[in-house]
Length: 119
Image 1 (spheres, one colour):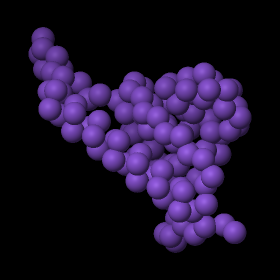
Image 2 (cartoon, rainbow, N blue to C red):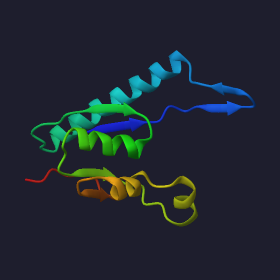
Image 3 (tube, rainbow, N blue to C red):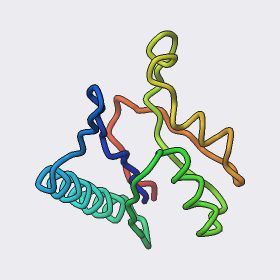
Image 4 (cartoon, one colour):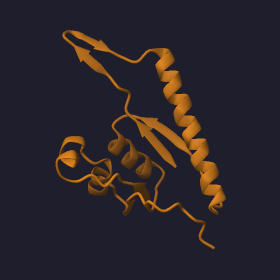
């Protein structure tokens, strides 16, 4: 499992504002907590082995780079399923990964049903 985040940077006039060290620590702690939670959830659903990693940068670029570096055979990722104006304004990390990855990409839309372990 890989979680990629892009550090928020704000520009105002001639100044660039970066998150404080405290904010970055909170962000990284939250990501570690989420990865730990997802790792446990995957194990409960029957996954034999789960590796977790985090990275920072442009999400679709880092996901493709990670998959290439680790010689992944498949990328599986969720998608929000936005369409229309919302898709045009926000863009789609999943779509960009599909277009640029060297390996197949399986995208999964969110479900209203809870996940169940497959026997």
